[in-house]
Image (cartoon, rainbow, N blue to C red; front, top):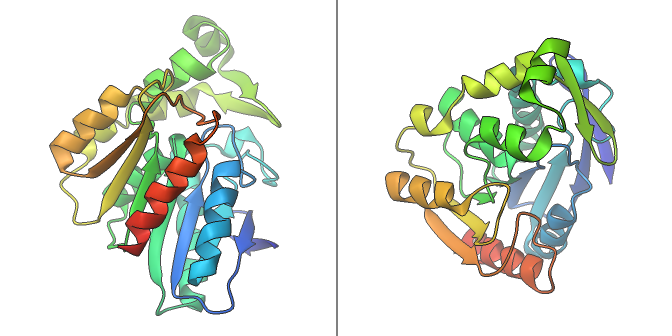
Length: 245
């Protein structure tokens, strides 16, 4: 099921997996240049909807079928998207537990949300979190030199949909370092990471786990996308167990 909700500046496109009874809500946040049609989100949702869980995936600004373009891609607008979706569905199901499932850049945003808009959640699952997003953007996403990017003031990236990224957004990433800004948090956080990830280094997750005492599961042989046989199923099993315990 698809639904648009009103954000602060524009409508936000969402995809829902709805059970008859809702005892938990999982807000799912995709990675950079991804969208709400993520296979990992769908796989998780298909299992969790059997357990009275409403799963809501949203498109970040400029991503998927978002009605706005990359000029709206700012950290503030990303957080506003996430917060607007969270508030909309949690207001409908006030007694439901509220959780997150976030991938890569989405995980970065959820951690940033905990810094800027502290709130107690039931469980948070971060899949291959992009903890140093500025470096990941340059090393794994940018298709030109940083010098050319700065000179032009924007670049084009993306897969299914071309995404304009302004240099000012990259400067935001440079100035927003999760490791420096994050504080010890009471939320229960699980990191799931592949030990062959060449986009978001697993060493960053190990360091974050050690500093903030999060839980962590490692998928042996998996890269950033968990595309090999059985890898995504392992991710979903770890996430399911964490939400249910």
